Image 1 (cartoon, one colour):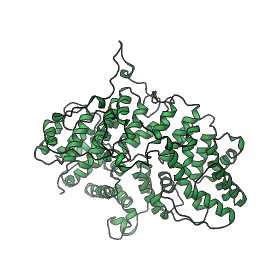
Image 2 (tube, rainbow, N blue to C red; image 1 turned 90 degrees about the vertical axis):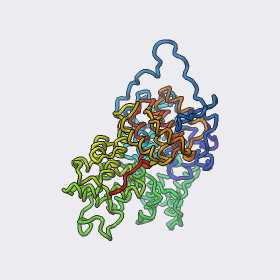
Image 3 (tube, rainbow, N blue to C red; image 1 turned 120 degrees about the vertical axis):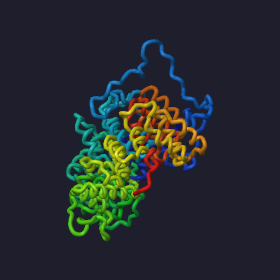
Image 4 (cartoon, helix red, strand yellow; image 1 turned 45 degrees about the vertical axis):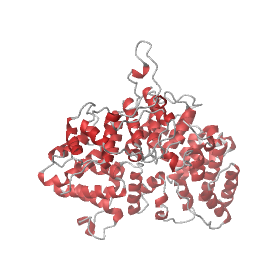
Length: 595
């Protein structure tokens, strides 16, 4: 794996913890956390090279390409008698992550930092995001080479913060007997971001002292927050001094520095908003007076969106808009969004008909959700649920929204009256992971291609031959499956060790395979294959994230998609592998004509 040395900052090399505190400004963050952002689109989407060392996912087995020896993964060493360690069932961590206790086996801390540096956070794929969250919250043994527990804990806290999972940070912090200064700094940053000024500033006051033992660059970030606390206390001299000390430590967070300098001089700064507004940027902007959050809404990072969604002092309309944006970024749970929807008061014309002209578009889903929840007629409830799903599909948040509304379908039984809605309800249930519910609706409406997709996605169904694929095979024979659907289906089935019907292979052979989609840099696919064969779970999961790229399963090249699914399956993460395959297939799955 190639990592550009110029992309790794000095303070990351010193302690790797400053990657967290660089979040105060995007220029600092990019320098130390995103070393591959400077890659051209041509390089990011290039075809695999021979030295990638990966075996392609075979879309066309009848004309399976001959793979050069240079592209074959390294063979596993022969067994020397007995059972190899990688063949033993792993001991699981004593938590709810479903991951091994030796999660970080095969990784040292420096390598972990390098893998984290290449990630786009938060992951766009809900399947990968769920796996990522479990990885960060796991109580597995830390990787080798950690100078102390604080170092590794701080990396997890920073990753959670960047993913917008602010509440999950508590789960990591609560079990620490005596947090060190770096962890305390990250806790204080989160507290200030959440508006808990008094608690955060008390910690910052202690950390700003020379005896705090913080690394150099982190001292500068602490001074910046000390300036914030001084400005809150109307201490102009303290704010000005903090600006000088922060700049001496190399801090380049222009927006917060400009706000503090203006506060010290009693002026109003002339500011240009950065391309991405961070949670702490927002808190510094508040020092200038009342702030209209809609000005920065489209630029807000996940942590800021989550904070705006949970602010009880904010307008409920803004809260709902922020919650839906955070949900789309996988930073807010479906349960939290449903709770916020329920807090909206129904009144007037919108209460009787959420689709009525003049209804606020920002409140549409919330109004339809409440209407569906109180609807007694099954047909009416199904109609409202479908309206939510279609609105979410247009905004690009279908997968996440499905998990919000699927519980409302639990008490509704399929019937002839509801058959016009069956296809949408099957898709919604599938996206939410409600496989029994999806199967019931698909079978009742004779939607046999959707029964096949339920079988593909359901982790209770084993590999081998699926009889339900006959319906899809029939569509392939009649030319009802497009090239993208054919090749994605063949890739997913093969990666899951499900027998691919011969007619699907034949149909795929007659269509050109797309070479578009994201491919990782050279060496990642070979590393992924070898790591999964060694059962190095943590490394494999991070490499899966690197393999799929910023677009998730929908934007990945077929080669990357197949290798990612295959790697998760090798680890025993069958449900996660199938969920990833489902996300790839749902957008291209054949749909019956609407009634």
